[in-house]
Amino acid sequence: MSVTHSPAPRPRVSPIPLHAFFKLESKSCDRFLILVFSVLQSCVCLLKSCDRLLNSVDRVLILVFSALQSCVCLLKSCDRLLNSVDRVLILVFSANK
Image (cartoon, rainbow, N blue to C red; front, side, top):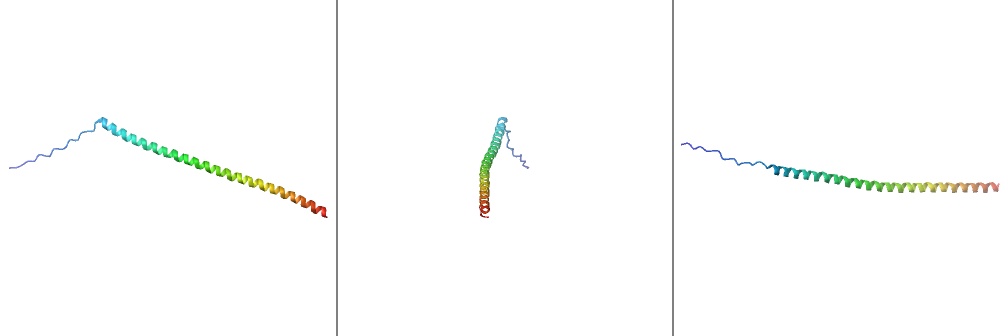
């Protein structure tokens, strides 16, 4: 007497309904768009920070150049003063001869 075993029934896999598939796809698309906008927002924040940094650098450079310009004006004034002292000394020594 031989016993034959019938194969075990396979569980049925039901296909994903079309509306559920699109729902999953839209969620993935939403997550992707959120990620893209987050990256863009980070880039904008970084650019704003760079702009503030460049503005600060500009202000520092303006201060440095203003200080240098003041030094140049001071040196010119000292040069005029020394020229005047030289003229006075030349006049004094010329009068003593």
